[in-house]
Image (cartoon, rainbow, N blue to C red; front, side, top):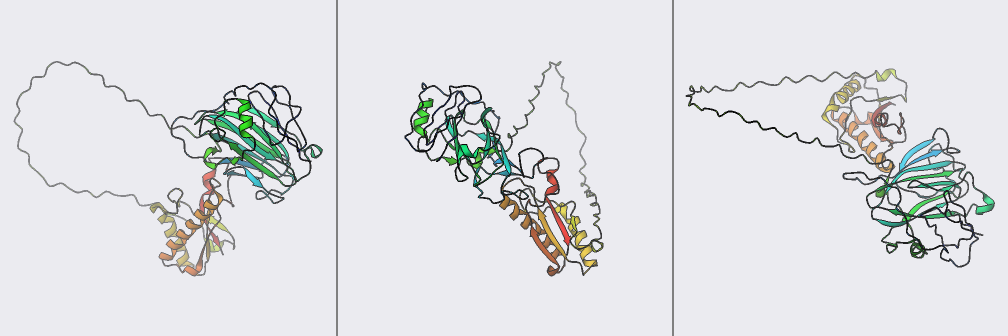
Length: 402
């Protein structure tokens, strides 16, 4: 037997491939309607009404493409300290008992996705979610669904999932809050956040039109470009020009003045005195035990690339001098990033930066057999990535004594 789980709120129409029995009258907080699988889907019996606009946020200026939603994983209930956190491009996964993130078990975990969705067009959307455990769903200022625990007798075996669909009226360019909590996961572990856009539904204007337009529709996972972990910051305001006040002055009597002859002299060239770079002091690497890691100070790259900046040369020259004085020293060059963006791209960037540092040392005469380069991406943070003040500490290059 397959069961579906629904909630009805003012201005919302919840749809499914299954008929819905026992739906309540509209009221704040919603009531559940449940029906076994099979049968013929029917339209809602309530009068066809317009869908009120959802509560959104307008951000002025140019809006960049989204990077995804903030995903916070817990080893048990979604309370207390998080076990792992990262930005994920969307919600569309079936774990099947596998660990969803480092340090998180494959069963009994919880995950919460938070952020905003940007509407690409104006009109009525159908937001589609699928779950197989206790769930909290919050869209655009409304609590759509709240479950403290998964009632197995109500929702069937571990192979079933719960489809929940709601209607929202979005305005193009505005941002709408999303908060999805997936609690005490057991069984197949399925989570989906998809939508049907107004143009795909034929631009319906009423609830009943939306119901029939969405029947049998194939929903698409909401793309990364429309998902944001935080609201984009508006551009800084430009200071207005101060008008120049014109004043009236007395007329000026011009007199012809004969200027003395100008004696041309050759200009004197003065060479600028550039300050010498501050000396870089590295710890005595030979005194450190094998496996010790030291972050290289004052190492700079062009943002999101492996292009080494000239300001990094004093540090690398000091490291090359240390290696010349200690010919038996062998090092691993380890590149690291924060957790912003795609994990595969961060891993590739950290590997490229480690290789650039190794190449510079080899050009300084260091034997290439003494150096290895490896990238770790964002898997070895030394600071909390959730704190913007501490996150830059995770973008680093280390040397590890071999």
